[in-house]
Image 1 (cartoon, helix red, strand yellow):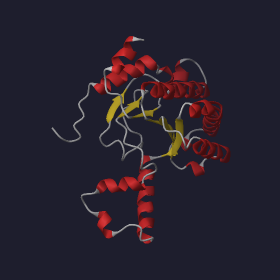
Image 2 (cartoon, one colour):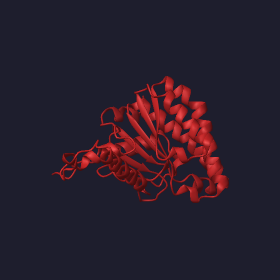
Image 3 (cartoon, one colour):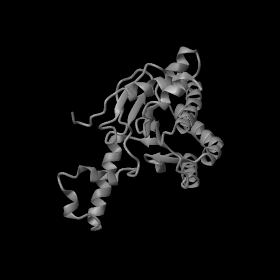
Image 4 (tube, helix red, strand yellow):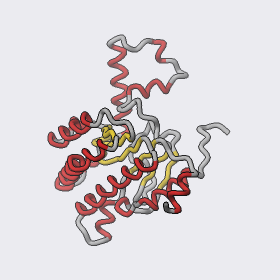
Length: 245
């Protein structure tokens, strides 16, 4: 057993770990490669990180794969991203499901290209019975859009008389969680963003209110098990007070 594996046994493992997977394009450029090669390398790392989460007992792992703003990228890059996603989901999901990984999606997957949408819905259905690790892929996702969608769902519930005036008490803001994309999923304990940028980029704006935020200069394709364990040790050494003393 490695030193890092031993040390992890002595610290608190987060229940929910979220990733902003940044730096694929810059990693590729630094090596004289095409951006598509960076995204392919990033997909390999995403799979390894999910495997590691499963190995060490993390229950929820959320990956920011494609934002509502990513449509601004060149069309051929967007198409490659989706084809890479479909390839990995179709090729790797059977083994993941066998290991108890439930694959879920947050965001407007119905607005994706038809083949990507159908692939996502099929794998989500096939893995619905799994409960060892929930792998959540934020796809065509934006935090502000999710909150706006939640407001619309709440309004629809009010119109259908499913929501009562007593439900809207000022001291119960957490009830709004019931109208978000995945209300049963606990908030991330920690968010790790690779690539050196220090912002949330419209990711999980409601859910990250009290999460620990870790920003690393490591580009996503360079993230490995050892670096992840170091970042988790940093998280474990922080004191989470949630506004208290």
